[in-house]
Length: 302
Image (cartoon, rainbow, N blue to C red; front, top):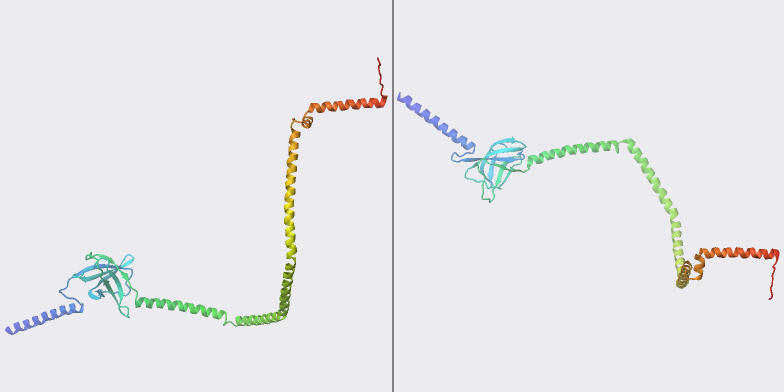
């Protein structure tokens, strides 16, 4: 019986040792220290790319936590992280999803600031996303696809133009016509060049003659302008005299329109006009009688 008791005790000790080794192995493999206490924070990013669970959380380059959970929250991604409780995150610290490897490995990087106010555990903090190798490769794939489309378009254009025999024949005919036109233009320039030079020489000669003519007539024209200036002065005197005559005629007309003089009275008195007319008629009748019957004169002498 004592033999079996010692055996059971040995088996129990082995099992207990195995359990202890298993527990410490789990902590070691999960990079956990049973003496450490962690706080939970919620980090919100526009995207996280290849960030996965258990990726490290480094504060100023020191690993002090890890990613516990990743899920979509509305239009953004919410990342749950656990950070040692002896580390405080000041408000305004820079939080980023960073690329740390050529295979697209990611981590959460936190750069602490000097703010006196700290985030409390379970606070939700907004962070930023840094593009890395994965995004560059994705963009390279898009560029390759666009390049393929561009090359296909270039091939189509080439096939419909340079690679098309009909286009080549038309292009060859067009080039021949262009060469013929160039030859004709060269011949035309060669034929007209002497004529153009002669015309320019004649134009220069005519310019010289016109300049000489202007020099010759400059003095007469100056005298003519001087005489014209004198005529303008004489015309000014004549205009002054005409103004004087006009003023006098206006004064005479004004006097005739008034009744302060004989002419004005005669012109403005209608009764005198009628009496004069009657007198003239009577005189005319008497003159006609004298012409017809003669003049009979009786003289009484006393």
